[in-house]
Amino acid sequence: MGQPAVTGRLVSINVGLPQDVPWRGKTVHTAIWKSPVPGPVRVRRLNIDGDGQGDLAGHGGEMRAVMVYQLDSYAHWQQEFGRDDFVHGQFGENFTVDGLADHDVCIGDRYRIGEAVFEVTQPRVTCYRVGLRMNEPRMAALLVAHRRPGFYLRVIEEGTVQAGQDIVKIADGPESLTVVDANRLLYTADHPREQLEKALRIEALSPGWQTSFRSLLRQADRPGGGNVGLSPAAAGPPPAWPGFRGLRVTDIRQETRNVFSIVLADPNGSDLPAALPGQYLTVKIASDDGGSALVRSYSLSGEPGAPTYRISIKVEPHGVVGNKLHEALDVGDDLASAAPRGTFFLADGQTPVLLVSAGVGITPVLAMLRALADEESGREVWWVHGTRSRDEHAFATEVRQQLNHLPHSHFHVCYSRPAATDRPGIDFTDTGHIDAELLTRIDPPRDATAYLCGPTAFMNDVTGALVGLGLGPERIRTEIFGAGPGITPGIAATPSAPPHAPPGPPTQGLAVSFARSGLTVPFDSTGYASILELAEACDVPVRWSCRTGVCHTCETAIMNGDVDYDPDPVDPPGSGDVLICCSTPRDDVVIDL
View 1 (cartoon, rainbow, N blue to C red):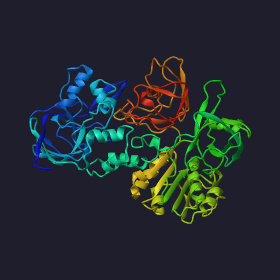
View 2: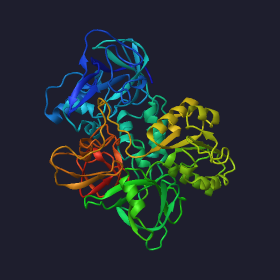
View 3: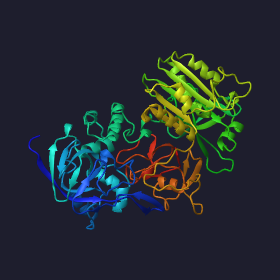
View 4: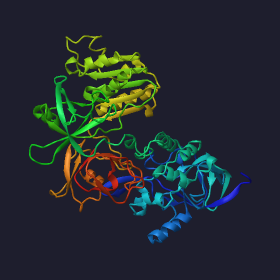
């Protein structure tokens, strides 16, 4: 560009430290409340003196050191809401500016203010806290819909700044991708390939947004589907059929003393739609007391692409559904089943594969092993499994047979309590548990993609060990038993409770089944504005951030039924998914939570 030009003015510098704020019966740790500070202020690489963030996962850090919002947008929202009570820092911004409109500023633009130099890195991250500050729950969605998100700056040169100083543009960002364009590219359904490629050529774009755009680019030529840039839940293919359908039981096999398999087929003799290796099947059975049906999900353990499905179930002492299936199901019965689902599946590629499991967590990675063996893959495949003894070692012979088809396979099995008759070097290779010491000795390749399934503590330990060995976290994929961990940004931790019926006297309403939590409860439309609110009342682990249908953090598979949205999502979820933060049941629903 030519001579540096004054493009705006720094009107106010606003800072604030995190504080605990009561909200909906919870405590939010947030620094969304910013207040103007007089005089010169030092801007540093990670922050402005006197400022802080309550949730560093979504705000702050080098690429989000300074948040900017414009007086023009202040005027817009004052008119939109009919309010005249705004103060500088109202939108959680550090710099209130005159000029620098979102539709003019580009990612990578550089500006000098006082002694400091800044670079534009990304639009604002949408979350519920700006709505909390504004007392407007829809605010996260409105910022996107009205094309007024604001943006973040990285500090290129530290220095002192002061309100009233000119903002001087000293360099144009490459590719001329405006803040509004970048925001639309991620948060709406408009993801043209050329725009994604343009965005990824901008070195200044923050790593998180680069990751999202790369995910969208990989999906750019695949019609349909949801927003994989926002939610991994959208990566799976659409379900092969809606709701539940009857599948015929053609075989029941006892694999070990506490694990059995069920083979299911189309009652009409047709081939069942192919499932991806690693996906799961959700089944529904009647309850003994005549109440709501019982719903559970089990990983598919059979050969991917086979005309039938196989699920394998561990019989637990208090596992109501597993015990009932084990005791009452017979060959020839029909079992109500939803279509295969899940985003934990074997990805294409040529890099090494590390399959790590514990106990019945073997089931999804066994399907992956079978897929690799069926194609006689030349990839390096590492099989690492842990169980107590041969008496509980499910699919031992089958695994050996599959590994024989793989020329570059490695076999490691740990028995934690081997019996005197268990044969070292034949039945198992190691004693104890899969841990950092064992993985260090195995020394898997650092470019491997790891697939982990087992109890939560096991996967946390193995993930930490693999990261310690040098595998990037993005190369480690996990599938857990039961309900997953929640994502509730900024909410103070409270003692966890098992899922339960909502408090208060029983109510009437459409049935909402939380499949992973084993809970079915009525939806009281007078008490809850969304499925998310009902789940929270039941202590079902949930994931959310914006609560208005923008960020897709809450995107979850829906196995049965349909929902209504209020507000409508900015970008609809993937086929077979639902955004629980802004939806209510239209009929009885089954949700994968």
